[in-house]
Length: 227
Image (tube, rainbow, N blue to C red):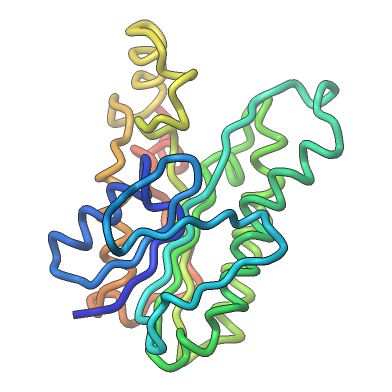
């Protein structure tokens, strides 16, 4: 059994990842912020805080999954610079701080790190500049850390398309919106949290032991197929 930490494991993709890993009989430690969880291995964590501890994490950590994210879609001219900074703090700087705090644990466990980007980084969509800035930084971080940490720690990133989670609720708030978004994908459906959790489980497992520095596109074909 592997010891795995899921940051942001109480909702959406993070919750599905926890469920998948528990089904695989891994030992899962998880954090929450806005969605309290009373289970023993869940701990409160605000990744934007300047001070927090991760003392509950075992000395040997075999996997780290960083899930906190946001979807803020606006025309570029309406986005304030501080809004870009807030997304960077949550999605990029937050991941950096957690990895730095747990680097020795991950080295001891020869761990695998999984981060998250978005299909919008490589494709380019209207009104996605805010999310693409922070997630584009995550893709660069993934490749840089994979090079620096090899061969001890593997680092990979998943770039999903729109996934049916509470975070995407405003984009999927009616049958019309759901149908329109499903139609945009070559596979003609919206992704589920478990679609992404299955990929995370693979990247944490020994089955992916020769995989590092990759941006894995789990997006219903959107990034590579013209519908």
